[in-house]
Amino acid sequence: MFISLILCIGSCIKKNNSNENRIVVTGKIQNFKDSSAVFTYDAYELLSTTQKPLIKINPDGTYKMIIESASPLKGFFSFGKVPSTYNFDIKLVNGKDSSLSVDSYDFRMVYLWLEPGDSLTMNLDVEKMQDTIYFGGRGQENNEFLYQEDNVFGTYKNKYLGNYYNITNREPNDYKKVTDQFKSEKIKFLKDYSKNHKLSPALVHVFTSDYTTAAITSKIYYPGGHAGFNQGKEAVLPADYFSFLDSVQIEDHIGDKGIGYYYFLSAWLHKKLELVKSSQPDQGDFYKYTKAQLPGPLAYEFMAYALARDFKKSLYEEFGEKCPYPDIARQVKKRYQHMEGMLEGNQAPDFSLQDVNGKMVNLKDLQGKYIYIDFWATWCGPCIKEIPSLKKTEEEYQGKNIVFVSISYDKAADHDKWKNYVVENKLAGVQLIADESMRTLYNKTFNIDLIPRFILLDPNGKIVSGNAPRPSSPKLKELLEKSGIK
Image (cartoon, rainbow, N blue to C red):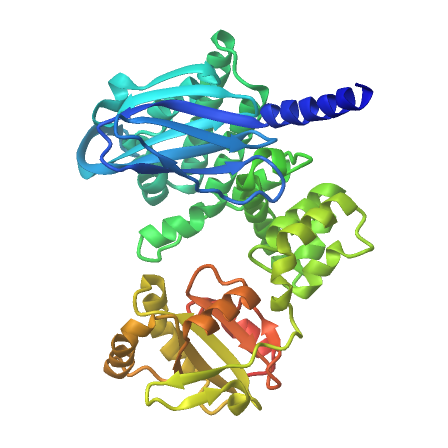
């Protein structure tokens, strides 16, 4: 009996812990034609990755979604889009009123805030979402807030003003003023709503942080955006335009605010370092500067996130045995261990691939020079967009100690399509096509989940950069020159 009691207690504890982390969303979705819907979400925990579970929608519209999470999460359902005309009034920078009519799309999206233990009901009619959406159960008030907040601040008018008109037409100080006003409006809305509704403290914390950091990053990116929308004509910035960077209040952690906080820190740190380098060109590298600017654990959390886009040996080694934060180091190893094959100095996997003439080409045949590899496909729009820049780079480095290799991810059934594209578009360099087994090898070794992807190898076939800059990026030339290719 004693043993049975112990087993029962252990079983019950496990079950209760599981239930504490379980999130259940049920309801009915009417007039949705598909038999399933994707729920895209991110959890508010260190190094979480975007999840996209497929949720079955029954013939009668009912559904049930179960997610296990120890942290709050925010996500969305997308139920398609329909053409729509938006009519709204705005006040121009000259003080005059103007009416606009814009043809665009109504994106039928519903955002959800979910926390461990929530049992939420969400019903809606896709054709009449505004009139039919309903939230009930545990998590009701949090999600009613998200829906109301999006209706107030996510309107097409606000998107037009924030993403185009204000950036294009307002002078620097005027832009800063309207950006801070918009932030204050959102914070006031959140505070007023919280007085009459019981919102999660985590939700209030995240949204307050998002409102504040979004305003800061908008002001940082304004000069580039303004020039981009005005045929390269740059705004004349007051000498103190970036003074707001010095008064930014930094919090202690990234994880509980989501990856958006990492992007904010990245923008803030890069701009600050850029300004410092204008008077001190010999300033140290970015991550050394990061460790000097951010409090201990935050600096390491930041570098942990940075590894996803800047996976290099010197940064990864920050989380070795001497890392002052072993908990963060363990999470980094768990998150990135499968990418260790990409680190500089590792030998790239050998290949024997077919070129457009049917000849087999081996990696060893190309060694003796640096090798810049482009993983691409004829069906990949962003890949095709890089081709003019790649051609220009090939011409610039013609005769230098580098060979350019393009490895196609086109399927075997599209072999002729790939070959014709290469010939018709006069693609230079070494043009190869990878079979399924080689694609699998590259994906595992170099952690390729998206193309285009570029890799630089040294004359011995060892990795210089497992995620090299694109041909369209000025940073590629910096990398090539740093490697001794001029």
